[in-house]
Image (cartoon, rainbow, N blue to C red):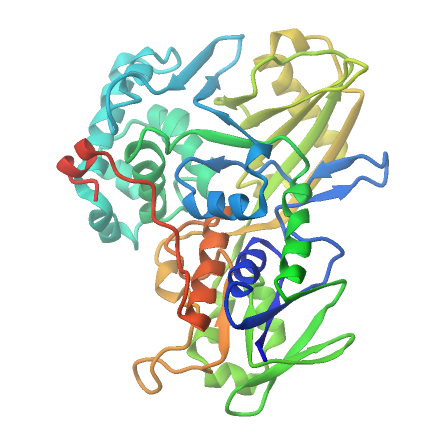
Length: 466
């Protein structure tokens, strides 16, 4: 008989872990409190219109090898549309295209950077100097900055404020959901090393062509056909602990016995599942209150005509940060999705004020939108979108399995942790979530594990990137 592992949480971490466990002698029982899989990276049916909308636009990059592996397992890779150019604008219809040239990585974007009109030649030279430092420090060098903000690193590199505002902060906010003043330097440096320097494909942007929840629809049948179970609408109340091990999970539907339990939920949700006795027994559970969230604002805008041809736009010098083209329907109405990360100041604004500010920016950056108001708006506030990757947080991110009993660690041996906030070596991303699920599954079974990172170019290796 297969040993049972109860996985609490049907987000990407839980899905990834369950798909790995069905390949082994273990039986996963995946429980999710909502009626759909995907966690924070999913879709919902808008009660106002009945239309399926994504909670927020999620992007996969070429460097996200584990997330791409999960999509391949689910058979949905064809639902990802790849773009090898990133489009920037500061308004007035001027567009800069950032795409790879003929040079090998990490120099593949140098030509496009030189042609960017929104940066002066002096600003580009400052960026080049800092980029060179990031290349030369390699992955080991960034850990020397793990207790500092990325702003401190940029100040050390003597980056002008205009460069920080119009270049560095634009990328860091989008990737890490914190601005340079709060984001840990090691996280931000990793974004540039892994996403923009190691490999020519690493920076490429993949956008789902279907609602996000459709990417996970195959997971239920795959898990069940593999001998596992998926229980939607099943809410965990507490972990059952007998002072030695976890014996199961108490849910609103009753007790689920288990050989092992994997908690693939956010840190605050996990904090509510553990008793004081269990918390004392496992060092991984003793600093959950030290983690914090960073919010994201996503706004769906519908116009009665086409106002944007590009697949996406990165916007500087405005409130909006990204505009994604979600397509045009049969009636010629265009759906745009505006995303603002690190959106703390937006959370207390009402829909009318948010719409007013965003439409003003849309008119500024999209000339065809001048004089047009959206025919429909849907504002989505994700107050708990991601954990905040602040300086020093890596020191308390828990691993998937318990450590050595005693001063060196200690923990409950059959309790496993997953989630993008755990110790996966990545900021809060879909890639990090999948990595955590794969790592937790390997900790249980001794099989599988992480997919290899995207290969670093030979020139990058010679320059010290790895």
